[in-house]
Image (cartoon, rainbow, N blue to C red; front, side, top):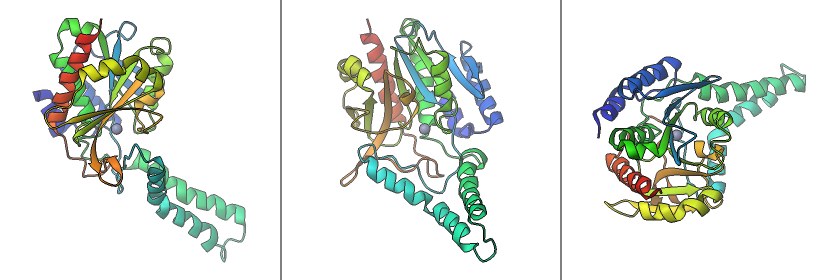
Amino acid sequence: MSHLCDTILQNYQMRKTDSQKTAFIELLQQHFSELQVEKVDKNRNLVVGDIAKAKIIFTAHYDTCGRSLWPNLSIPFHPVLKFCYNILTLMPLIILMLLVIFGLEPWISDLATRTLLGLLAYYIPFFYKFYGAPANPNTANDNTSGVCLLIRLLETLTPAQKEKVAFVFFDNEEKGCVGSKAFRKLHKAETEQTLIFNFDCIADGEHILFLSSLPAEKQWQPLLKQAFKDENGLTVGFTNSKKAKYSSDQKRFPVSIGTAAFTKHPLIGYYFSRIHTVKDTVHDKKNIEFLRVGITRLIDLLS
Ligand SMILES: [Zn+2]
């Protein structure tokens, strides 16, 4: 692992506020003079390489989330179970809203006023989670792992290999993939057919899944299977976004692959369950190295 990634793991895991992000950007600029900050609205996406010429654009979001009490559970093959889990985590707010609407009746007779207060009781804590909650101090997997993979590629690829590809560190994924949406809007023509290869939560789990959009599956899966093979105790799986759901920045792009690492459970299959909480401390460097080697192979396979 590079010294830069160790520094980020030690001192730059919180990248939620403007000043935390600025400190991180300045650190990257010290190491990579070619890094461009592309500002669109409130997003600062960090770009290395020529987006128009790149055959593949490797991406990872660098922003991090607020500290949450409940983990953001990922179970890509069971969307209904995931939906039920999400409802469960919202239950305290739903109960609070109902208590305000129906419990205040003796004091406030007007139903419209009580409904408005109930909605406020629901939405204020809901949005606080996105905008007001203090930064989660531990983001080893989400997404310091993706950031470190891109950094390792920038450090190790030869100039000829780098020439074929580009890199983007997206801002504001945690606010709803806002940075990647802005990037797509700005580079619509250039990203219409280019593969966006995204990495989000790749360092906690021994099963690496590549979830392709249908155009990406058709165009890229044969090459992907040549580049990534089971090795060093890690397995790879290839599926498409119709069969498995994994929400991250790749969803903004037509030709795209989302990549994440999972643990396998006998009942629910692939899952991970620590991110967005203080338990997000697992950062297996073996995973980063595995993906770095596979990507390097993939780039060498490009004509
Ligand atoms: Zn993430």
